[in-house]
Amino acid sequence: MKKLMTRLLSLALICAFVPSFVLADWYLEDGSIIVEAKGDTQTVTQGDGSPTPDNNPVISNSKTPDSSTSTKNTVTIIADDKATANVTLNNVSIDVRNEDKAAITTEGKGNVNIELEGTNTVQSGSNHAGVEKDNTGTLTITDKDKDGTLTATGGTNGAGIGGGSGKDG
Image (cartoon, rainbow, N blue to C red; front, side, top):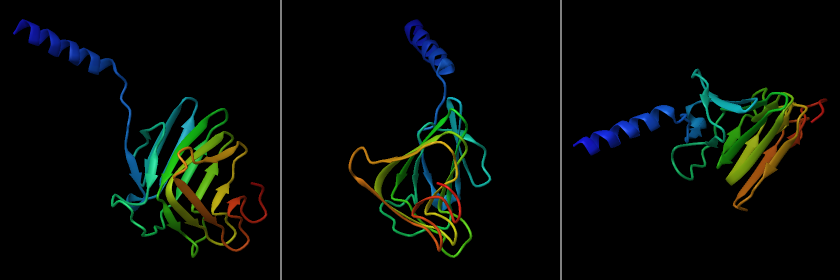
């Protein structure tokens, strides 16, 4: 019994000192998503929720696997100066072609890394790029496992990936 109590106490102490982190998928069906990188930390805010620490969020459209239904909810990725935001898109389909906004926007002075998984399709509204780069840092889109695609379509006067109408990107 004493041995069991010692082990339980040890486990409780370990749990108390291990930092918590989130390993969760984020679903656009639950609302628009803001990813923000500041220094060495990154948070995700969805809808009216509070910022939640997540250093590599995986963003999907739906909790239903292989759902092809598009959403009007968007993704905004903000990377402060000297920070890097890391995001994975997994079967995302955003269609805001009838609205005055971009499907995915990057902001801030830091760098943004987007990893692709599955088939990702984004369509933005007039004067916006499909993936709109409004920041001065670098935007890097990769597919390390060679299992992802991205089709990014801007609205009228908007690039697929880059700046909105009359903007650098």
